[in-house]
Length: 263
Figure 1: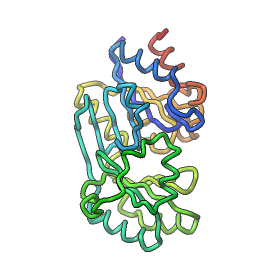
Figure 2: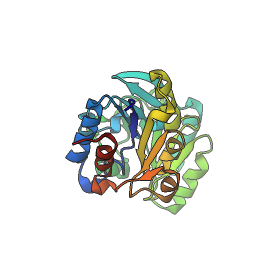
Figure 3: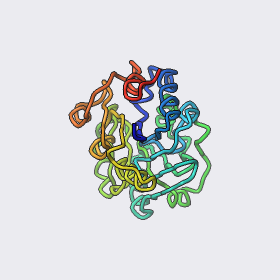
Figure 4: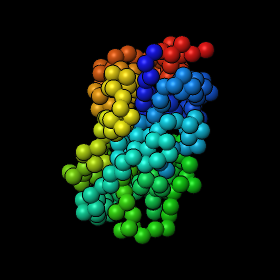
């Protein structure tokens, strides 16, 4: 078999809170796939600071992070795309008017005010190592280093207000209607994946992805073969070449075993 490159979403694909982490079956299947010479990448909306040790210990070949704004391969940064400072500053000023919580995500750490108790509580349940959070910082300096932000709203009124502030950005409202990812319009998992394929001189036809959520749409429209989790939203299932078992049923492990004849 030709060498393949597989891109894995994290939340809802490799991990869900009900599992308390990534299952041993999934970890072993990814390791066995890599041992056959195939490349395995994380492709996530998460920044580096949100990638927990139980993900890193699998030793992925590379990462497409922050919805394509940060690309790593072999422990080296290949591309970093920062948010426009002026647009970000304007957005932050608008969020402060309503007291809306937010976190600034850079290529290394996450920066947040200790008063953002709802966001901090939310992240504590998301398989994130909070040791990567910084609470004392010069916000203006960090805005020059920001790849992406995440916002927390308390109610529909704050949600509607926040959405009016995002004109210069792309954004995704999570199903809880509280947390919102905000990122640049010109990056996505798809642009990150294409950069990786170009760098490694690999064909789109040899690329595979697993995903489940809204920010996986562009990825599913880009790779050679797309696999939706059984728990994926309908728009992802509609675009998938195949649907596997859910994350709670070790769908990734089962499908990798089938694709690559793993033991």
